[in-house]
Each structure stands twice: as structure tokens, then as C-alpha cells.
Image (spheres, rainbow, N blue to C red):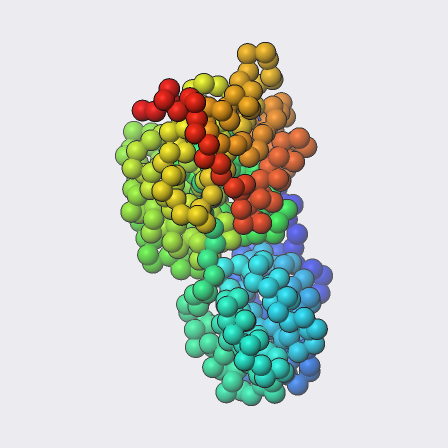
Length: 422
Ligand SMILES: Nc1ncnc2c1ncn2[C@@H]1O[C@H](COP(=O)(O)OP(=O)(O)O)[C@@H](O)[C@H]1O
Ligand SMILES: [Mg+2]
């Protein structure tokens, strides 16, 4: 299969110290190894101090530059993935807290962020800690302070765990063929490309999954390996099991013999998801349509469940059942209801109003009937697989998710409830 090479390589002049060049790795379609440390300091003395420490400790895969937060962000965002540690300097930032809020919002969950600055302010320190910053180093910097704050001992081996975690997003159709895989891949594409979020799509159909076909990637058994060793999966182990499909887009899939037993269990998946949210902003689950303990447990764990129903009675009945499985969800967990028009509308098509009445809640998004989807999937051309109308709807869903919310759920009593109860 043809491999597309469309993701940006690091900006010209971004010298990556270390043995391997990021862009070359990306072009081999393998996950690039993250830099150990990126440090941007606003004054030459601080920069030189960090540089000499890096030299003394013979650290590899490190970039030290002079610059402020915007310089650091534009550099880091040009990399295939964020570094294990990021040292930023707020000394020249007029609004340090809002700058750092911006950084915390887009930083990859696995990145440990350390801030240097010249304000001796307990309030600022506390606010930075609340944003998930690992340490605040008061200037002038000293080697001892840097050694302590930067966690150099851990550099070459284990990435340090950050207190921030990504979100799990399950896409499930209300019946087979409702368009869940198409939406899961489209959303992941949007989150990675449109919103610069590090995203992994996990294809939970281990026998006949669609995700690799949609993204034009070769079959993989990464998901099976990941399940077997979830607890031991660190940053490097993860790079071996995921497949890269763009600077921030990864897939985790399996392609096992249709006669073989399903290796997924609620416990093994729970363990795997706990690891994945430490490394990705979004873990998008393509959930095949089926019922049972596995799906129930997935829905319970997901921050967002996108329930996709086509306008048919069967879908409405099943969507009602699935939505009931989310009734115990916490207030921070969202259930997003989307209607997917798989066919052109006819007078017989159920209207959104009829579906809302049946389900006793509002429909959040409506995806239009789109002829180009199947064609681009068949051709394996993912860059074309989101025609404008469909793409707009997916973008709206992604915007809602990155803003932290689906629309508030309505729980109006349904006149159809009796018909749809089990
Ligand atoms: N809005 C839509 N308009 C037209 N075709 C669609 C739409 N959404 C999905 N499809 C097509 O429907 C088929 C089934 O979609 P898929 O995502 O594989 O469903 P599922 O994963 O729920 O089984 C695919 O061929 C896909 O291209
Ligand atoms: Mg599917």
C-alpha cells in the first residue's frame, strides 16, 4: 500500500541533537523518539548554565535555546511528539499565568513541565502547581537547582509521570454499519491535525477492524502486544506497538484470525487505557456494535461516549438502551448523541424531532449523507476521506470535545420509553 508523507517535519533550523533526525524517522512511518529535554530560557546566562550542565552530564536528545514561551511552543509543536521534559521561562512574560494555562492546555500528557522565572510569589507558585507544572525554579538559576528541578537522573531511563491525563472517547454505533469507525477515524484526524492534539485511535474490532484500512496502514498486532504487557508499557514500549499516521496521529490495532478468541477483557482494557491516557491527549475508541460486559465497562470508563444512530427505528431502540447504560455516569462524563444520515432523506426517514421524542433527549449533532466517504475509504486515501459537509460536522464535534463538553443532557421523560424498555 502507498504510504503518504504529508506531515510537517521540524522547521528549518531546528537542530535536533542526538543520533537520529526526527524527520527521517517520521518518513519511515515509525513513531519518532521524543526528545528527552527541550529548554527555552530568556537570558543567555540561564541558557548557558543549562547547556553546560547538559554537556557535563553527556545528555543526548536535548535542545537548549534562548527564547520565551512562544518560541518554545512553536518549536515543540513542530516536533512529531512533545519532549519528556520541557523547561520554560516566564521571566519576560507579561501574563505568565495565562501563558502557562495555554501551555498546559495543549501540552502532551506525558510531558513534565518545569518553569523558571524571576517572581518570588507564593500565589504564582501555587497557581502553576495547579496547572500541573512539576516545579518552579526562581532565577538566578544554579546547577544544584537545575539538577533537582529537571530530574536529570530519570532522563535516560523512565519518563516522569505528569499529573495531567488525557481523555477517553468512545465512538459506538447503535447498530452495525451506523458509521462509527468512519466517525472515530474522522474525529481522530481532526483532533490531531485541526487541534494539534496527540491522539491514538484504538480499533476494538480485533478480527475485522476498519481503522488501518481507513488510514491506509498495514495490518498490525500492536493491540495484542499492548494488552499482554499493559502495566509494563512505558514511552518506548508504546512506540513499538502504535503505528504513526501523521505527526500526532497514531493507531493501535490488531488483525487476528477470525477463529481465534477475542483477547479483550474488561480488566486488560482498563489497564491499557490507564496507560494510554498518560501519553495521549485523546484516546479514541472505535467500539464495534455489540453488547456485554466489555462494552459496559468501556462506556463506564469513557469521558466522552459518542452514540451514533442512523434515523431508523432499530437504531433508536438500541441508542435508548445504550444511553441507559450511561445513566450512572459522573457529571464530568458526557454522552453525545449524533445522528448519521447513511442514506439520502426520503419521506419515510425518521425526523430528528421524532428521534428526540423517542429518546427523551436532544440530538447534539447531525452528520449529513455524504457520497465521497465510501469512495475515499475504498481508495485508501484518508486525506480525501472527509468531504466538506461531513468534515464540518466532525469539526463541530471535535470543537465541543476540546472545549470540554458535549451539550448538556436533557432528561425529559419519553413517551416512547415504554416501547423501548427491555
Ligand atoms: N454520513 C454518511 N454518508 C454516507 N455513507 C456513510 C456515512 N457514514 C458512514 N458511511 C458509510 O457507511 C459504511 C459503514 O460505516 P462504518 O464506519 O464502517 O460503520 P460501523 O463502524 O458503525 O460499522 C462505510 O462504507 C461508510 O463509508
Ligand atoms: Mg466499525
